[in-house]
Amino acid sequence: MTALQMPADAAEARAVQDALRARVVLDEPGPPPGTGLVTGVDVAYDDERDVVAAAAVVLDAATLEVVAEATAVGRVTFPYVPGLLAFREIPTVLAALESLPGDPGLVVCDGYGRAHPRRFGLASHLGVLTGLPVIGVAKNPFTFTCEPPGPRRGDQSPLLDAGEEVGRAVRTRDGTKPVYVSVGHRTGLDNAVAHTLRLARDFRQPETTRRADALCRRALREATA
DNA sequence: GCGACAG
DNA sequence: ATCTTGTCGC
Image (tube, rainbow, N blue to C red):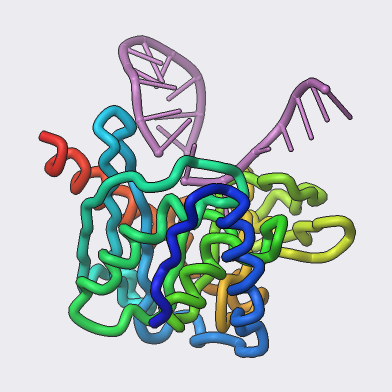
């Protein structure tokens, strides 16, 4: 496990990303969808008090039942800067992941992996630091472009950065806005999309994200109260 | 120079 | 991310 480097400013943060990018593994397919464990991670903030809470929720990939969960609370140590989200979220997310009783399996996080100005978004960063397979599922296209996917669940279209496919817009529910999937670490894009569709069985967002979102909000509320 | 911009 | 009521729809 590589330690997180906390840069002093944005320029240093970009340098860290450029240095770590070479460690991303893109030639592994990743765990087969529907088997083993999948872990959702998410973070909630109280900007008034500078408090951040993270949650990691482990699901059985076949049944989507919760099998373990952990939370961590910390101080905000980096501002939100587009392209540098990882430095704001990762310290507390790592603490939550390390509190889990066992192996997390595939990690699913909010935001992007390869779909990033320097090809090193949150999902890539988290993957390199932990060594785990990680994918990113975001709720909007960031700075990238794509044709709208077809209207039905499972329809998808490439997410493009100057003509290069950096992710996929995926319709997880008929007639609802797509989600944006990209690879973080040790996972292929087609497999990441397959995982996303299995996890988004009942709602637009993956069940991992929904569970982690609810848990980190609760942890923040309890830490702040 | 200006606007846009994961969470 | 977060601030926030009611409201439309399955």
